[in-house]
Picture (tube, helix red, strand yellow):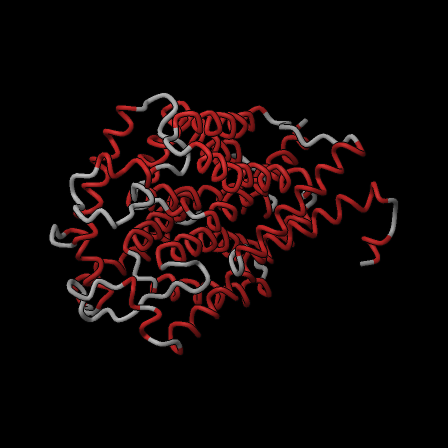
Length: 411
């Protein structure tokens, strides 16, 4: 507090913006409305900082122009939408805030102490989400939690955890992101023999892993297996032994976890069949609108024109249940190249970091996160969620800040 009160307003304003960004890290997973208020507050203060004090927050690294390209092209795609006003609103609320939180985090978190604070809040917030999820899972009425259960195909599955993330798949995606980064941090702490950090990180990761399991989200489980595979190849080969647990579960454990995993290979699961139909319909959208797409967040308006599988006109399909096809359909091929280029270039640029622990956590952590998101993106489009995407884009901004500092050291 003394640090904030000292200095001129020109010096205090960046500190205030940074505190709001810390608030976003902690609050967005728990209460997205409060998180949005903090994002908007930080954006408004940043406008004052830029206009009044002439501080620049433009891209300073070449690859960040891909982020700008995504922002601009997805805005242009509004022109093609059958509901242009709604699409423009959705672009402002979603894409505009993604870009805002990315560049704010990048420009206002520039020291190792600030990055560590970000990581602590990132993990602590996830622990709180899991604790609430555990309470919800064990104490709340069944009727509040059984809407995500397919009783016909999984009669033994009574409830799935979703905590503060609206549905089980989104909770699974959120925990996948946090475990990928925090797990990388634990491996780095083990390498550095930082026993105090290891002591509290292990129970936190065990709690998150159990909650991920209780989402019963098969795509997330499979994605986590690929994250472990990534860790085994890039960090420590002994971690590959963890993958031996998968055949053990499939062949020796006869519970709902095993039945959910086996259902991935069954053509009888309606959710699997639905996805194949959605993907097929989405390819026709891409073929008809290859340049600008159908407009950001316009999938659920356009899908009925391509629907041949679901005959109930009251059923709303909000996205394609495939991240790659959905982005291609909504913002076209050029927009998708900007979008995925902007995401994956962060992992490429983060490679070759110095042995300093934060650099390694950023480099291998974002690699693990993107491996998980890529695999889960084949089966679903959880970044459709405003809440999850804000968390993800703020994390990308954090990684970009670490990359920038590394580049300055090299120069």
